[in-house]
Image 1 (cartoon, rainbow, N blue to C red):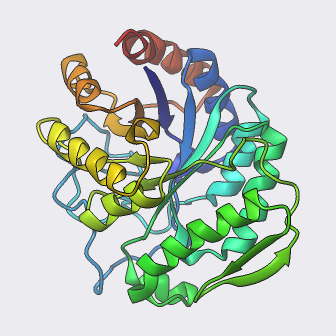
Image 2 (cartoon, rainbow, N blue to C red):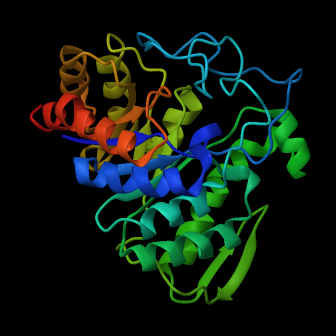
Length: 314
């Protein structure tokens, strides 16, 4: 089984030197993909919003230092300081892709309804053409009304905007002269080049565990990026997702189900996820990676022994 990592883009890990060094180290260690987070703006408080993971993710929490920019045990938004840098994910993916040759680079997750799909399609197609087909787009509908207000996008429309944006992106990537007529985006015979290098366009994986999110995966997704999926619930939820996918006339075996786990995940639990239908894993770093080049290399060598190689043998 393949495994990726989410470790750059926030706080002390938001610098270009860290992203470049850690992406190279991840590739050398055998990681298959490298993921970037997303928030356009952050706030000190979210009085109008409910953070969806305030009660945790159903996983045993890793040990974390007080300096870790993300605190997984928090009962509010996990970024502990709104002044912590949080980079633009497309630019971060570009930086990581340019430093590597085989590593897939992805967003986990990009808040799609806040983006103009015509502009985003060009950005990702350009990157995928440069990276020779290594780009993944993980998307979600978002949870912070305050952020939507700042972006000038109605929060109540986020689900419809997400579904439409997925269709618009695929039209721009896969049609020679692209046409699309939607409520929020419309174009006729638009030539958007370059096209992605990957056949069929950039794969779109969908985050979230709600029933609307599962329906979105089943109907539109190339895969699913679950976070809050306890191992004991995984067989039932994935079986339901597969049945939904069949119901839309699509092949559930084609879905990439990439489960986000912590580096302290037990191998027995990973086997149970695999047996339930998870196809790959994504390690959410808990702030344990050093910032210096020697420390990064040593930590990723350790990851190879403790995570990459054992997961590859599952």
